[in-house]
Image 1: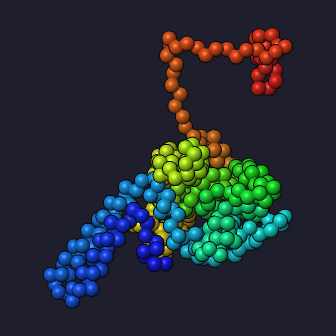
Image 2 (image 1 turned 90 degrees about the vertical axis):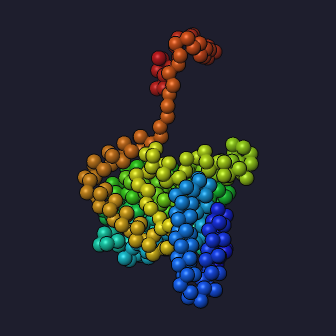
Image 3 (image 1 turned 180 degrees about the vertical axis):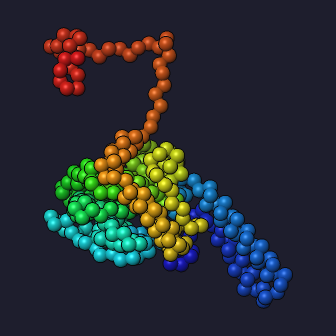
Length: 351
């Protein structure tokens, strides 16, 4: 991919500096005084780049997460696994190519891998729905999770999607039910589960692979209940306000780590994972091995209890005390035909 094509909008100052460095290098002729100046300019370039990526705003983080050169699930099957054997199909409808599943070996540890794959070129993205999984994809994942449970293999789930596929056929085949079944199954699956957000993690499409014992997130990935464009379209009726939406969604790895919604932020090479795929693979491989060893050392019953407790703790809110002189809310009128004071509780019995 050409550097110009892969340049993100906020990187234009870097591009101008790099152009000046290249022009000077081409005309320096090896002159010592120019070589010293070039070295100084290269150091300046690195300082500017480090400062830029240390202070990305949420929308800029989303742009990095969506970079077309960012490594995807099929890249990681070779970058972090010693061997991988893909398993296909849900045995009910068809093989959803947006969901990669199979058995792999990483540093001598056998695992089951699940991952959403977005595709590189237009043809592949058409086949994979750009990573938007159909119900058969989630059922395919569930079959592999059951297989992993049967043979005592930990599950590694790589999350990278804008959401489940919203088409008519997907709805007709029960995509909401398929995601719900995965949530239930993963909450009680009797084997360790490690979830990693590698790019975009949005909506229930991400959550369908997102229940586990540890949740890791790459530094410039994002994880949210909805995409910024979807939030802007619903809240402000204007999908173009996606930058403002990203600022409100608390979707970056640092914010989510602060709120306890993820367990670890995995650092990326300077400029994002797409700048150095091999190095990114080494970093993620080390994080996966370390976390797999940690969760696999916990007795299974204890692990399930900890997983349940983690799910119950998700989400925090503040409840302000009502001032003493505040007027209490009016009582709800009793339903017709029922005397006041005989309201029913949640179980259907009189309170």
